[in-house]
Image (tube, rainbow, N blue to C red; front, side, top):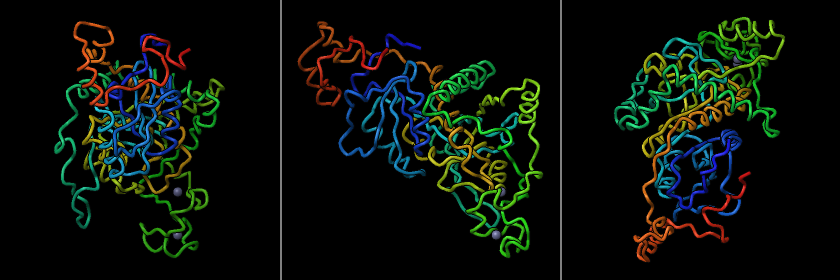
Length: 401
Ligand SMILES: [Zn+2]
Ligand SMILES: [Zn+2]
């Protein structure tokens, strides 16, 4: 869709949406969703000492800045967010977009979460921050409590979007954008991997050498696991797919496919809830379920806790595994694509604010308020982007069709 009034921002301060991706497939999917890039002719630079790498562009009616994280985890995301703020001081909303592990039965209304669904955070729990006791970790606090909740604007917006109408709108538009993305030549291999690849094992059935004679360590105790098993796939270990938990949604999808004789079409569901965030990669069905029961979290992520302090942050992540010992990477591309599509649908509903008149605009418009002093002040604040060509803000922006 064209947004004819949308012009290229003139200053870094004109960007209000920050997007943070830890993995390159996450950033690839997000860039696949961009409507325009503001990179070709000029870049907006960055503040002195800011080591971050950015991509700027437009998604729908919003100008966005995507930051590419050099690594995973909350300390990397915290330092990235701090530098982000020094370069882009007008950010109103931070989105942590990408892939996560989902809690299969975690949704508040008891709905099933299946692979490829999207999680939108209503709060973040830092799960590796606390005290380890014999049988459990007692975390110190949840971020909702000790760092304050989302600001009023984000809380109200999430309230609206998680309602019946808002959620349907989000799901419909996400599906549309996902379809568009997967049709692009670069994303032809990013489609739905298939319902038969979506396997959830019971919490008591672990990913290990399944035949006792195959491995002494794995056979020694119920929760013992050898290194070779950690590095092997379910197929290599003969994890028994007949033990998988039947899922109603997958079953319905398969039935519809047989009736209509078409390919299985997955419409990603969107779930709102708390996300557990920490530096540990969760790959234990036992700890997953314990934390999910204790904290009522529905997904696991590694970046949100670091970013939360700096922006009003919403996590939008596609479920690529069940945070259990059987997890694999088969679903990562598709989950990254569903998250990026949902992010675009989310931004479609997010309202931009009326812009206060910028000091430089009054000068541009030759209003009586214009003055050399205003220009100098803007220059000192680093607000002025010096164009490399003679294009004016009113000219058609490069890349606009
Ligand atoms: Zn073993
Ligand atoms: Zn397995």
